[in-house]
Length: 237
Image (cartoon, rainbow, N blue to C red):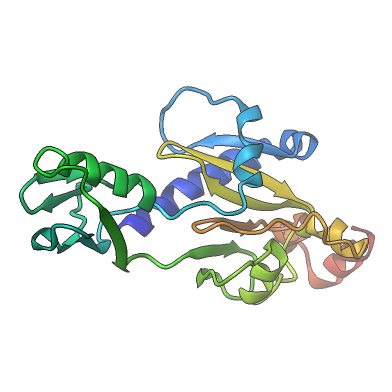
């Protein structure tokens, strides 16, 4: 259900961005909303692309162990409920969704400080959503892929079957979630990078990123032209 909701928001963002693609090419990136939130300044977006090693954030369905160094009677395994809460022994319900492991540790220490003196707590993730990226549009095998180690945009496209003949190499879109309401979008000219044989600007993907390859102009017109006319048109495009 969560993936379907995310894909719906991404499709809305794709349509919004494609309608302003000329502006995006000139400015390099944009911020698009996945809700009815007020506009967000575009100059705050590049930082999200510079953050190479984002920390994993706890989400619904995750399971982790809570271990107490001096009070092992409170050791327990908990799962995050759909509303983002966990139920802790001796403390009750605590909201933890969206927190990194260090933030979660601090939250639990604060909660247990009500009944324990300076509790020493460690967190061990057991079952959690593995890092992934999504490739969509004009690629050979659209879908969701595991993100293992450092993976660049062009490597992700290759993993997804490469470009189709109908793809627009010069306007590949990289979507990255900024927060619950906003998603950043950047236009990458892969055609230019490959023609210059310089992949220094090939961005590393973050968990949850989506790569969208739009159709080129010729493929959009293809149903309207006989094959002979299209062949001549392709040579001059």
